[in-house]
Image 1 (tube, rainbow, N blue to C red):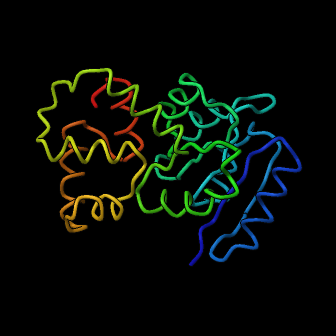
Image 2: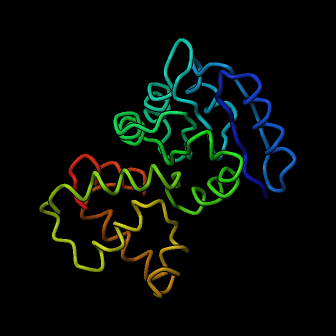
Length: 208
């Protein structure tokens, strides 16, 4: 079974390029594309995709506002932002709005297929430069009052780097189910329900 996607991108050449790239790649199906995201929440409801690819700078409504609208009714669909912006404010605004990952357009040809697979495995994929910036921002703040164990704290760091459960298991040498248990404990302490919400809260409260 392949991954079902919707693409929101106002640059026609890029939009068609993304669609053709995914349709020619094994395991991907593009359900719908659009040059604006004005009806994104309704279209996500109608087409029920696994993943939404969302440009930030869109006509009529920004991609970040569209993510907020989608998240009011759907906490499960994965949303990967595609953008030329690599400044802190756009990154943090997108993640806090509910984005599941964040890729720079200059990396899209090399990173997109893997990013879709990672996000469907529970990760939060980001371009390397974005991940480095997010981690640097979080390292400036305190751990907070959540009483993380050392292992939970380390796993939260890896989660915030965009790693999936499988990648964290490989990095730490722990079993997949052990990682799942640790992450469930992290979610419970943070009072969140997904990797996206955990990363968002970690950024907002500077927990790492």
